[in-house]
Length: 231
Ligand code: GLN
Image 1 (tube, rainbow, N blue to C red):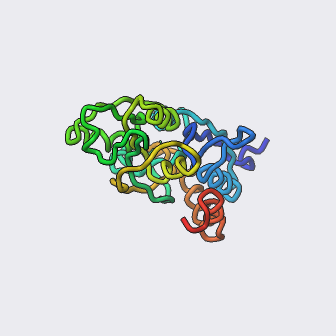
Image 2 (cartoon, protein in one colour; image 1 turned 135 degrees about the vertical axis):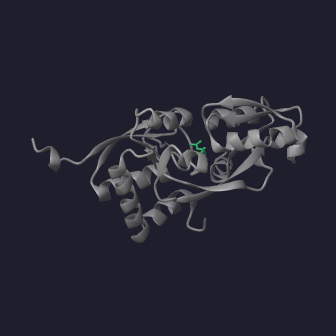
Image 3 (cartoon, rainbow, N blue to C red; image 1 turned 90 degrees about the vertical axis):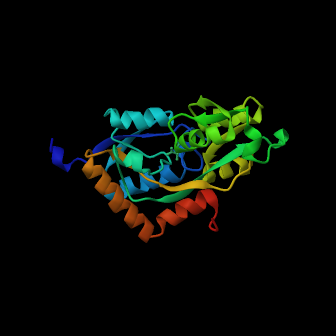
C-alpha cells in the first residue's frame, strides 16, 4: 500500500455536552458549531479523524498525555494553557457569567456568601470562580460536565454555577431553568488545541481549513444554523 497517498488520521477529543458547540443530535450523532466546523475542515484539508467525547478535563489532560492528537471543545485560549498547548486561530468570543435558579431570589454575587457554588472541573470558569471565592465567601463543589452542574443549581443543591456566556445563554434558551445574574467577565476566545510542539501538521491543516471556511461563508452558515444569523 502507498501510505503517502492515504489521508492522515487523527484522534480528536471533545466535551460530552457543551451546546451549541458539541452535543448529541436526535440520532445520537455529535453536532454543533465545533463538530460541523471540524467536519468541514477535515473535508477541505483531506484528513480523517476519530471523535472521542469525554469530560472536558479528561480530554484536555488526554491531549497532554498523548492519548489524543487534539481537542475541540469550546476551549478558551489562556496564557497558562499556551504554555502547554498550541492553539489554532481563535474562532469564537466568550466570557464567564454566573447563573442561579430564578426561584432562589439571588440577584447578586454578594448573596452567595456561605453558599455552595457549582463548578466544572478544569475549566476557565472554575478557575475564575475560585479567583473571586474569597471576596464573595462562597464554597465550591465540582462537576465533570455542564448538564450535571446546571441540574445541581436548578434543583437547589448549589446556589449558582459559573459557565461560558454563549453556552449558558443557549441552554437557557433551550429550556434549562436558570437565570444569568452577571455581565460576562474574563473575556477570551475559543481555540482548537494540540499539545505544544506536537501535531504541527494537524494544526496547520486546521488553520488552513478554518481560513477557507471563513472565506467561503461555511463558518458563518454553521454559526447561523445553531445561533441564528443575528448573533
Ligand atoms: N471554555 C471553557 C474552558 O476552556 C470551558 C470549556 C468546556 O467546558 N468545554 O475552560
